[in-house]
Length: 264
Image 1 (cartoon, one colour):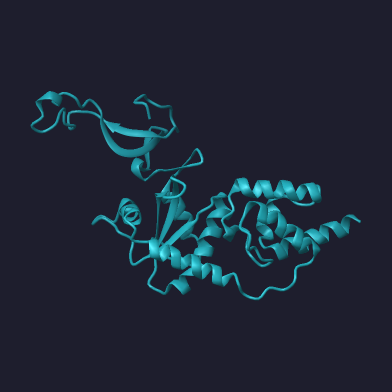
Image 2 (cartoon, helix red, strand yellow; image 1 turned 180 degrees about the vertical axis):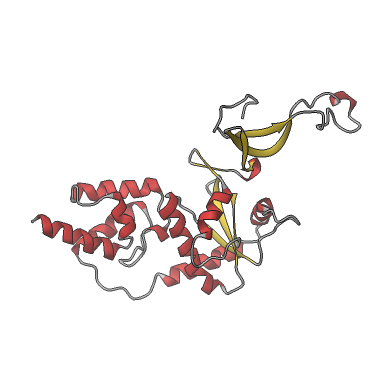
């Protein structure tokens, strides 16, 4: 990104030069010869002599030192049965309290907010399970804005978010999600209580035995921390892959109790 050439298979800014590129700016004599390489605004890399475009540089999301490409996240969401292809858009937004950029998922949805709540859990769980990515903001929109050529205009969604258009929707979704968690719950057994206490150290305080770990917004870092704590109590009983096979407290506790019984 410093204006230097990069090796093959390395992502960098796409700049072009040649006779078909303007050498200056209209009616700007001072900078008439300023343009040697024109920044296209795209990112890409070269593979075996071919150029592969990975996306727009302004769409890139920076999170915890990682580069996230919105179209990659959208492609992953397209694989879920609950979502139609092309009905989601991911963009970076600034959280007003944290003052940090984070991904926001916008979903083309025409139903009620009550009907949208289960879909938010599905989306959060899917991104968490596939990428270890914690996403807090999942919001409905009437339609995904696109150009006449069909390109998603993610920046428009970010502008609408920063303009406060989704403030009331966010608050209402938070209330609905809280109500959904207040349903009946059976008494937890000893292993379940222990697992819930560990989960509460790294996640929310209102975890129930049938909550899906990944729908709670579990990042790969948090999952590793949870595993390390559990491994102290039950050394070598669980692998990281077991959390994906048994994502709820109840399922993991049942599996863990079987592992403990077999070792006795």
